[in-house]
Image 1: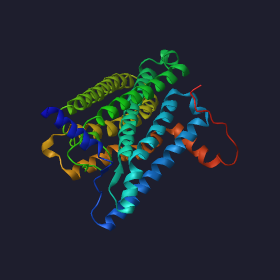
Image 2: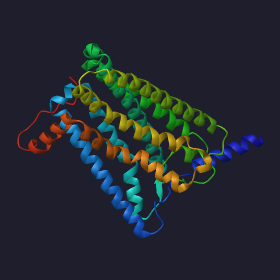
Image 3: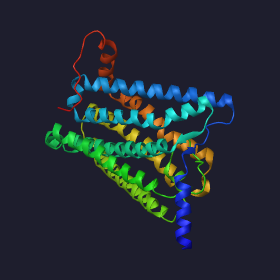
Image 4: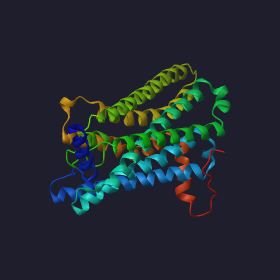
Amino acid sequence: MAKIKSWSEEMSNSSSISHFLLLPLADTRQLQLLHFCLFLAISLAALLANSLIISAVACGHLRHSPMFFFLLNLSVLDMGFICTTVPKAMHNSLWNTRTISYAGCAAQVFLIFFFFGSELALLTIMCYDRYVSICKPLHYGTLLGSRACAHMAAAAWASAFLYAVMHTANTFSLPLCHGNALGQFFCEVPQLLKLSCSHSYFRELGLLIVCAFLLFGCFVFIVFSYVQIFRAVLRIPSEQGRHKAFSTCLPHLAVVSLFVSTAMFAYLKPPSISSPSLDLALSVLYSVVPPALNPLIYSLRNQELRDALRKTMTGYFSEPKKCLFSAA
């Protein structure tokens, strides 16, 4: 009877939570407005840059290339990722508030896992594209045809959707009885687990461990692929050929390094070095910075993409273009 009473009290405390309190980005009004301006500038730059890449790829001949088809998908994911957390943080900084609704928090958790999982899967697929292009060029058209690319992109989105549903449903089925204050500027699962008063949170910890293993597996696959890629590139006799091969690989390697290293350190760092300010800085690094830097990284090293972007910016309004959002 005591266990039933305790469980019912926990469920009552959980069901009574109508909103959560997020971690403020700053204590003073001046710093809050400064954070609002910084987040506004970063988000606008990310949305503009990714929109240009989407337009350049979808409205030109680049859409027929598997690499640029996957880059289009990556830009869509980056736009969704930055729109998941930054607008609410900007709203709270501007209006000097900390609240987020229960439904809004659940939506953030779902979208974060969805976009994070999709982006990780897509970056792994893009690594496979570079591996086949350089190490098995004669099989490139067979292994990465338009239908195969569409199927791989759809699989990345669908698997991330199912994974996000599983995480969100499990997290918000836990009874919460340790208040409603989160130590993060957005709804993050480790912070929500700290509010749980049930031993069933071990289920979510198990899912997070599975997530860490999947992340590590993708990382190992990417490292192994790039070892093979660099070995093949170094065997290319002409310097121009080696430079061209490196120019297509280095942007992807830089994006993967930025995305994976910040996320892994944020979630796998030792508890002894954890602090609210460090957690806040790391969360900004993996959730805000990559969507803004990815377009810049790809455009700096890829002449073909730069030419397409230049044509898009100079001739988009002068003559109508037919945009096809497919690899076919």
